[in-house]
Image 1 (cartoon, rainbow, N blue to C red):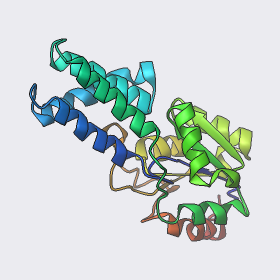
Image 2: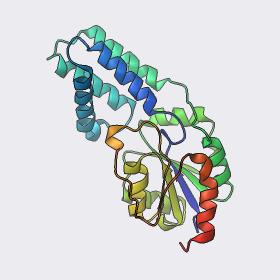
Image 3: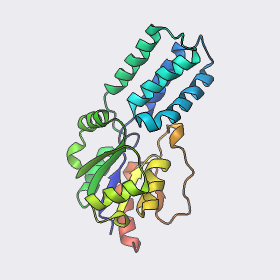
Image 4: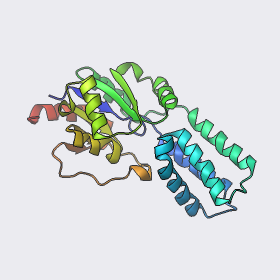
Amino acid sequence: MITTIGFDADDTLWQNEAFFQLTQDRFTALLTDYAEAAHLQDRLLEAERRNLGHYGFGVKGFTLSMIETAIEITQGRVPASVIAKIIAAGREMLAHPIELLPHAKAAVTALACDHRVVLITKGDLLDQERKLAQSGLGDLFHAVEIVSDKTPAIYKSIFARHGDGASHALMVGNSLKSDVIPALDAGSWGVHVPHRLTWALEHASPPSGHPRFLSLTDLGELADKVETIKATRNI
């Protein structure tokens, strides 16, 4: 039986990428005298990819990557006023109110009745804790795991610690690369709930032929789908 349900947070339960893209647009507007917007965005993405191993995921690493890109693009001539505006934009992101996605609370509430539900998210520790507290969902989760990355080994460890092992778990998220594919590789079910915006570094091809892969339109379908799996599959 499926006994444990893992939920991603950003862009699965609440909005996230939209705020990154808005801030990226502000960043390119600040540097419009130095380079075309498309070139600035490409250079920023390169910096983000390069810095993941140093800063991890989240707003703080994104802000540092914007500053680094501004310095590189301007060959060190970026005005201090622009750096100050980039830092201010990062702080605004860290203070932005939470916007729950449709059906998020209902889905977690329904599944928490008969399963262990675990929040499994990447990002800045303080920021993710803030967002969870503001979301009103915190009391619904049996456990919260804020991790540096999402790999099959991490999923196996979490589902063993908070459940009956990965084979009895299901992971739900908007990212095929982070939420679905490594969970499948760990032996769990992987449920993809697409979001209209997905960070370029989270893109991956859907594992369409995998027997434990599902894709839903939104979280409103999740509880019924879990019950269908439990009723019809020999898992």
